[in-house]
Length: 375
Image (cartoon, rainbow, N blue to C red; front, side):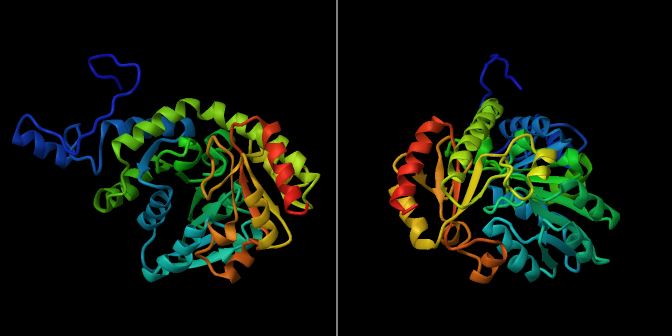
């Protein structure tokens, strides 16, 4: 979308509202009888440009941008589910998503069941007559378990349920869940889509019918919409998304190969040692940008973190800079110790998000940090 000045970089429309040529024009827009925007809580030209770009990259009919990834996740679920409905979700989810599934949704009368998402039969066995949706993340945060999207989609659709996928770890460059049978995909666009640690953003993509009939009214009246400035930042980042993600995946594979020689329990979907490596090869175009490792205990994990010189300690991921965190004390601190154990998050677990640095420099930093931690 270009204005009359013909700019090469998309314009930022920093406006909260819009004017009309007449009172009838305003009324007609609100009735949906004439094209045009009414209020930036629902529509904005810059945000719309981002939504169109995300839909094109994803291969989706429609997309809506949100203020954060959690706004995308909660909006996807709350717009679809009502009191008396049942949701089946994978056990291994981002910490806030587990809180949403375990604590917040039940407050509104929505029944939830969590299953080992790697076990296709577990999804089938969890179905009930009132099951309306399956919610999964693959690769999972932070353990990097994989879910067979196609097989799970067949089970869900047989029961008349929708399949919702958190695809933030993979991005549409590495994995396209809609092509594998998913119905709705949600993102923390803060991660790889921006990928430079600048803004918070999220996105929900799916069919025009679901977006218009289910999600749009929810968005209109609850206000999760993204700001024009943040939309513009992510819009510009999408221009390099493919280049960044492919380079980061290449770096991650090289770093993971090195770490596998030093760390006994190293998890990366791109390595043959991953228990679901064959599934990764079928539904992912690369191994992704995240590596997980399990050390002896929290003390050893913290010792490694404290020894890092190039890699930053941060709970963010998908950044152009490499970042490492201790999930048990950061991203998944909000869930109970029992739930962390259920999700495979040990006290010695570390999650490493690989950036765009020279991989040899990352290996040098990790090598000296491992030594400092006694490995």
